[in-house]
Every structure is written in C-alpha cells, then in structure tokens.
Length: 107
Image 1 (cartoon, rainbow, N blue to C red):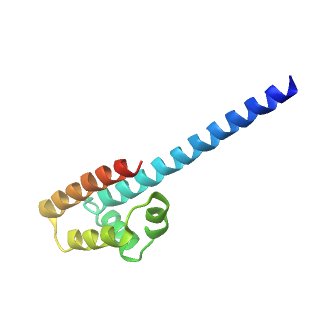
Image 2 (image 1 turned 180 degrees about the vertical axis):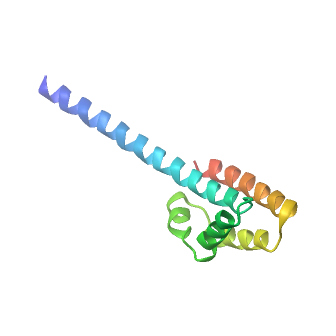
C-alpha cells in the first residue's frame, strides 16, 4: 500500500512541476507581450520604461527562457521606436501578433 502511495505522490509531483513550468512559460510570454504593448502607450513614462526594458536588454533572460530570439525582437522594437503615433501602434500590434504566433509554435 505504501508503494502505491509513493508512486501516486511521485506522479502528482511531476504533474505539479509540469504545470508550474507551463505557468511560468505563460507568465513570461505575457510579460513580453505587455512590455511590447507599453511601447505604444499614450503615457510617455510607460512607453519610455518599456523602451528602456528592450534597449538595455532586460528582456534577454526571459526570451532565452521561452526560446525567443532576443536580438530579432530587440531589432524589431528599435524599428517601432523610430515611429510615433498611429504608425508605431500599428507596428507594435503587428509585432505582438508575430510574437504570439511564434510563441505558440514553441509551446
């Protein structure tokens, strides 16, 4: 009876670890998506903080953890930062959609 209990605990522990990793992966994706959205925020302080997040490469560890090419993402962010207003917003939205599709393929 104890052997069965131990194996059940082992299975549930493995399931728990898998769920934790999946939750961490999803959280990391959401963090990057929110930082991307913030690039086109109407509040200058928010968009500035987001720009700093990418230009100073704070996004690198998260991108590495979820298997996203941080250099390509940063290059696209820099292209967005050259624009303003509606054009920047559209470029950021396109970047977010591209990020979502690439992230879902990795998942």
